[in-house]
Image 1: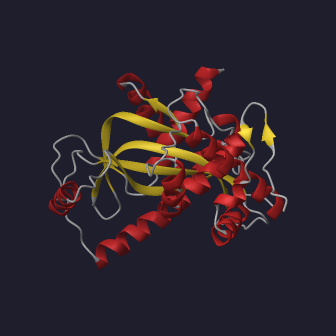
Image 2 (image 1 turned 120 degrees about the vertical axis):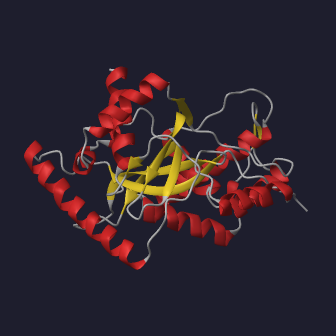
Length: 304
């Protein structure tokens, strides 16, 4: 009886089919997610996902060899789709990476105090509609990245709750919830806010959670995801004049303030936390968009 032998490359050795390492139902689910989030048909989604798995399996096979492997921006989309499904990703790492998570680190930028002050100043001059002039291809310094602030920024939201922001992460995404709707969605950017586990805002319930996580042997990471914003990235409002952008911002602000009034009447919230520094009043909850937009624009301007 003949035995099938996997083809072999003279450099990398036996060639593998990534589908042999991914359950059929998981593959179908992740292909569907890519088709939902990006303007891909099933063939393109499968190619991007397959290359994402190929990159991760290769990185696991050569871990510790200091090869400085990194995916392209297109393959990185597949990688993020895979690793965000943490349970399934852990199952992939178990046989291929000795049971340890293969951590995927995007481009990390640390903001200096002077740069942070410049971004804060620029953000204070922006209105929310200004951020809808974003050009994802031109304004982002890298397609996906993490910006770590030199100190947490403490925000008070529309109902008075305090939170601190220690970092922002971003990656490209296709947005389907805009108005008016566009077939296939609009190019956009997903922005994730991270709080500091040991930051200045430490309510009693949070301290209890941190302690329980530590005593259980699964301590929380220093940067903890705290919120997600979606920003359009196709210069949606770039044709408007400064006055028109201002008017659009006022319309959005009035909606947010109405929501604030309603939320406060339903559930008054006290300022709970341990913090004696300055607080950014984020009543219309657009600080994240204004800050990260200002950072991107300043970073892209310096790069030119």
